[in-house]
Length: 306
Image (tube, rainbow, N blue to C red):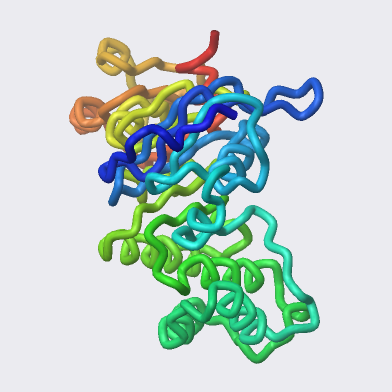
């Protein structure tokens, strides 16, 4: 990996990656990615499983070493100063390893000791309460979701300058997912830069200000979340009280009428803003509406297929 230690740090950029490549044998996990995350923003790293998200994060923490390219994390070269980078960062891996016989509290105190006691223990207790985690229970008796809560707490417990989170809501029930997202917003409001990977588009849309989309080890686009949302494809099924022609709808930009076997329903594929479609549907005898997003992979195929 090309060293970046001679490059003056930019305090406005928390993560700077240039030309990063990594292969595992014949498998190219990263194919020369470029990425910049601004200080103080919430940045989503979006892609299907196996796209290269975890490999990128591990390179940023010097847990694995890339084959080529350069990286700066909070102004530091992670290969030259891995201890400094890891001390300033809160990291949640996709698979957290624990001492199974420890209680959740003892495990978290162990993490605090590893950080020279820098954890805010009052904050740890607050986090445990908000996430409904019983810290007196042994790790081996915790469900997958509760183990994930321990991982979230250890990432936040020392008020890091940067959060690197790999699928932070994995295994959590919907209410706790929302609480975790609230915690990330609060940390960000206090000055923490948040970089998190996910394959859940709705989660990224609700939290991130900007998004990088990675597919097969390549960054296919970096954009504001609002731009990504405006490009998203929706499927809409309109159920009618009686049959009606779809001619007026077919003429709307970004709307495609799909085949339907039912005369009292119209199936649509909609790209972009739905405001004009909603206005047009006001003239129809609408009984019910059902909308859904295609899978992330379908969205990739729609917009980034080579």
